[in-house]
Amino acid sequence: AGYAIEEVAEVVVKNREAAIANSNAPYGDKYSVDDVLDSRPVSLPLTELMCARYADGAVIAVLGTDEAARSYSEKPAFISGIGWGSGTSILERRDHTFSIGTAIAAERAYQESGINNPTGQIDAFFVSDTYAHRQLMHMEALGVNDNNNPIVNPDGGALGGGDMFEATGGARLYEAFSQLRGEAGRCQINAERVMVHAWRGVPTDSCVVAILDKERRVL
Image (cartoon, rainbow, N blue to C red; front, top):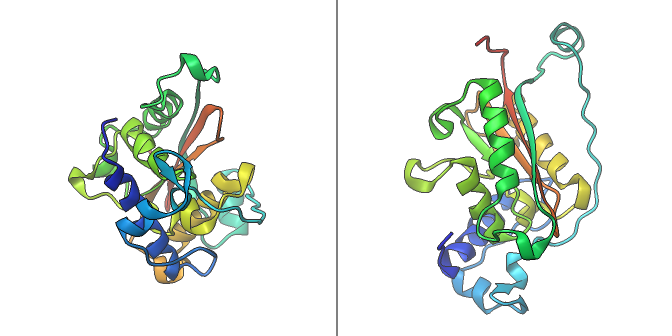
């Protein structure tokens, strides 16, 4: 809460530029803060560039036991924690400055994976940014802030990769998985543990958080 509109525009600038390096992202480009603020108004103060453009695609995830994963894949990833949460869908009764669904989902996922310091224990965060201001809201609810310079949406997020409706979270899952496998191309960072967050979209506050590890960790 309390973000300046210029900070919202910075999310667009960063994510769209990061997407230039992502061969899966159709909307990589370079913009300035002024470009974002001066683009066509959609629902003030949101402008067109603050909203992810539509994209088409499909994502398949194969789940199995640890033994099956190691038997059938040379580079599996392991889910160490997952949580789901939802705030009210009655817009008049919801705090639009905070995502309670994200906070509930994060608390459950962090508890299951033994995380008490997200920015200190997670290498990269793939956070829903279908609307630029929602990324900032979600980060706050996830307990992630810019003080520790976290790596957020190194693939360009939905702003760079497109809004795939119900599959948008799946796209972030794919990008996170690619990071752990070392297959993220020019977007690759050194990641051993990543977090994936997904928001179902307007008018809901239904969210899911998953923690993925390169190797299975025993608490």
